[in-house]
Length: 154
Ligand code: HEC
Image (cartoon, rainbow, N blue to C red; front, side, top):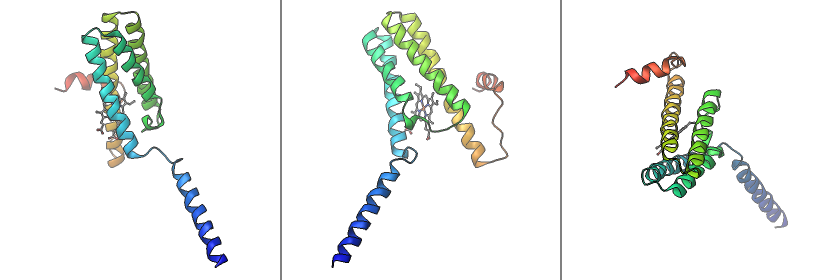
């Protein structure tokens, strides 16, 4: 009986520690999805604030975007380009905050356009990486191609 209790305790401990261990694993898919969803919502709120000249809301939602970009779930890929696009995104969101504080609508509008471009560029990169993973013979387009292919496609 005593033995049974001891082995129960041991099993319990093992289960507890293996559960603990899982929290150190890479971000879970659902957490990533949730983060990406709230990224979309805050960026939509940024547009709303921009067109209604609501500088407080603009600064608030741009700040949320900066915070999101620093979370572990943000780092879906671990490569220099993804890092570059993440930094661009954060810099543009920070420019939005500064322009909101300065009540500069034109500056904020430009920062919003840059921010949106950084969304599109990063998503394009993510798609290319996935394509290469699925088919190792497909090479991602060289960096110099990016602009040309974007302007040419409909
Ligand atoms: C540095 C890279 C990067 C930037 C910048 C970026 N995203 Fe994403 N986004 C991702 C990744 C990675 C995913 C997850 C893709 C997947 O796993 O399918 C994603 C997913 C999404 C999704 C899909 C969420 C779902 O339902 O699954 C939306 C919508 C989205 N992003 C919007 C945006 C918007 C809007 C911006 C700009 C304001 C933006 N993203 C900027 C990398 C980025």
